[in-house]
Amino acid sequence: MVLAAWSGEVDAIGMTARWQVVDDHLEVHLQSPGPGWVAVGLHAKPTLAGARLVMASVTESGLRVEEHVARPPAHPARTEGARATGVSGTGPPTQVVVRIPLDPKVPDLVVLAPGQRVWMVLAWSQDVDFGHHSARRTGLWVEL
Image (tube, rainbow, N blue to C red; front, top):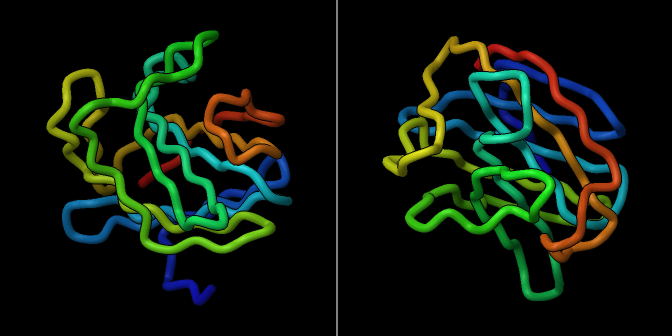
């Protein structure tokens, strides 16, 4: 996978996340240490609860992307009307690029802006089923 010039990068829990703001969306490249789903959560507060969570997996049928509002400990339900999309994906290890609209136009999802400081949650699972809990998860402050 060829990478563009990214404005930010984080390595944590065996994952790499790179991001850049492009026009009206945030483009995020995620790489996990093996097969399974990957996720990035974005929030104004240092917590998973209430985060805008984008999950992605690569299966034989292709790239699958869903956007959720995280409501731990329950599995997140897909957010109706959310518009995060997949750009590309390969695996294993899972590597995906997702586009996340800055303004989701959906209640309960955080609106993003260039230069904004957000709590970024990174997570991955060894399973491609989004119903499985993460094997690893962490969160940290980043600037978009």
